[in-house]
Picture 1 (cartoon, rainbow, N blue to C red):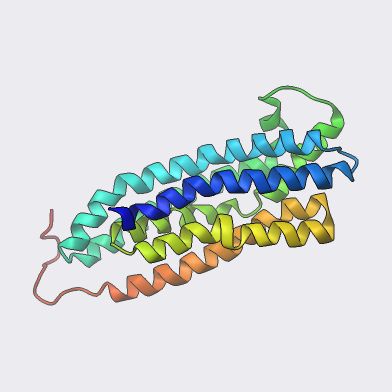
Picture 2 (picture 1 turned 60 degrees about the vertical axis):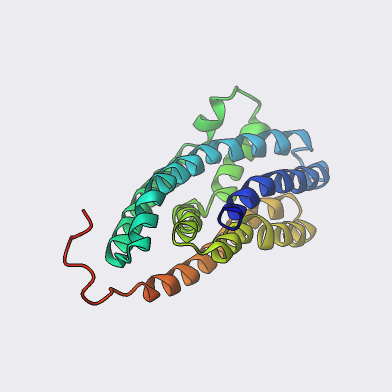
Length: 225
């Protein structure tokens, strides 16, 4: 239980680390920009919370499928495991695409839900939604792949996937890009980290799915109803 649950623990505790790093960099870089330090912190906080609603929905879908995937994996019905995982990925990606479209098309309207501010505030909010969440379309697969690895008893893979997005790629990207590009570097670090994390998750998932070969004679077409 501890080994399989460690990736979820890392995901939750990493949020604290990420917030601390981002807030400090926003304060430092924002002070040197036209937006000041208060606007970036306020806007990024809202943007992260809005996106977390979408991520939570993806996690809910994947968590609901975990018992089905785990049961069929234990029964060696690997075809059904891949079928269910494919359905989960499709659902998560639909959410991701819808969220991406909203972030890109109506960022000011979304931020206005949390209160109306001045033009400078809205300008940064628009940039934040469109840059910070640029790789949202990749988050669906990356999010559910970690829970998929938990379901098939791959805690090490699940941990790597959890660590990759928020720690391994994200934090170095934040420090490097913010040092070079200032406040805009803080925003661009997220889609870059998301893309790298998606690539890692895709490689690990494809490798594991290729290992899930049907067991001769164990199942017919649909015997594990």
